Image 1 (cartoon, helix red, strand yellow):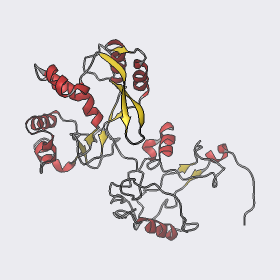
Image 2 (cartoon, rainbow, N blue to C red):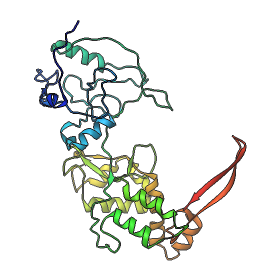
Image 3 (tube, helix red, strand yellow):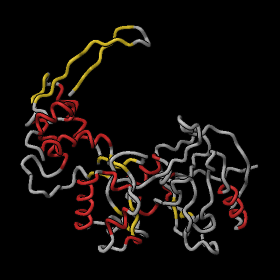
Image 4 (cartoon, rainbow, N blue to C red):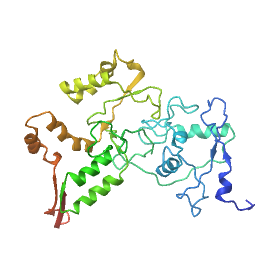
Length: 338
């Protein structure tokens, strides 16, 4: 039973400060003690439910974008859910608890959270509901959306390599190259690529895959991605890695003892984590030609024979080839663009 008291506006709600149910809990180590507030968001409506939603910017795209636009990501982003579907080990009360088991079934985290909320008198009600939930199309297991640190190419940051003929940033150079270094046939082919490069955000270079060319970097233990010393920047370490790759190839990164091999005598290996993310394969495709042509006198001929689709070209041609689709049994056209 309820009684309507009055109407309130978004401005009224914005003045209210909120406390987490575990605010000040003994043993919480201040994890949930920050004051929160209400935020207006276009993706929340009063046509479904109450018109109030809990925001988790580390686990939802819309929430992430909301706090990104507010300039508050550093304040609200958490790193509580690990790659194995468990809470990070040092999370008070729930460290190491499994959100999902390896078989996709519910772990012990949800029950532990409910019990803790009840213990601190912060639980209004409990119950079970059935609702649709995202699943992996490969394994059919439930999926946890989580915001993860990734490596990006800053396309609008000055490169500072002294080669500024066509621009100071990656974006400026790409756009200048499209207009000044390529002849387009037909000319309209230029527009699509130009508009794509003009508007694209920073390029995410990292992928979490079991195979590929490794991103050869180390991160400092105990630091967050927002810390200045999170990424190890050391020219001597880079030289060691380069020397190993030139002799042994990228497999050198995956050999036993690789971290100690590259770091010993320069920095303390135990203080760093070896990154096993791989490079975006499209970056490989777009850069292979440079390494082929740069170090061989006959590189141009070799590249043309072996990597024809990766060679930098001065003329771009778009054309149509007829092809046949055996599934739908009708003629089709394949658009090929270089």
